[in-house]
Image (cartoon, rainbow, N blue to C red; front, top):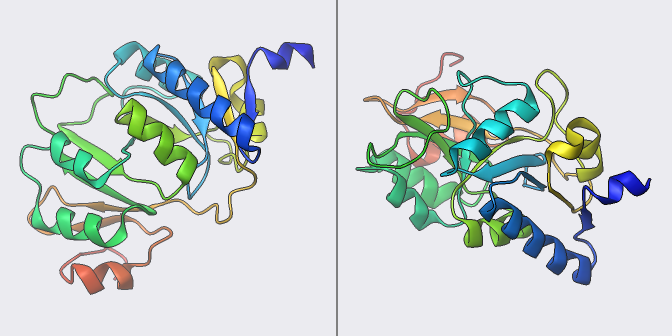
Length: 221
């Protein structure tokens, strides 16, 4: 039990522990270390998106290679504009309608960005999560590379304690906020082509997306 104390799990349901945990997570990310935090879908393990060795540590912790780059989470809608050269109208409309929330948008990132999150072919999957703990961290750290907090091939963690069983000492700080209310993955829409495409049906159904961007295509429909 004493060994686990070195890993630092903070119960963010306690106000005092929440403040300490968020501060520790922000410091860890700025130091190039990994953190686990709750989102509105499942728990995520994250690192500073602009620190290549931290992103590599994230991929190693999950057992993934560079061919599977992690999504990037942001703490504000405006951050998306800073990641792209020109934001497509569909992306802007979807973000305005569903962010913060369980929608991941794939865009072409600006070629001038000084980051290396894997083999992305010039694109990045971006999301603004609807969770106060995650947003508080992200607003201080800036964009984070974040993937589900589990080893590849294992079920996503729905608590920080569960994530710690998967990832152990690879992570500097774990932020516990209880069981995820709806452990459903985010919906993913690719807006890099002429017509937006649904890549993954998730928490937000296609019908709601089409209320905002009617031309979204899906292989299933």
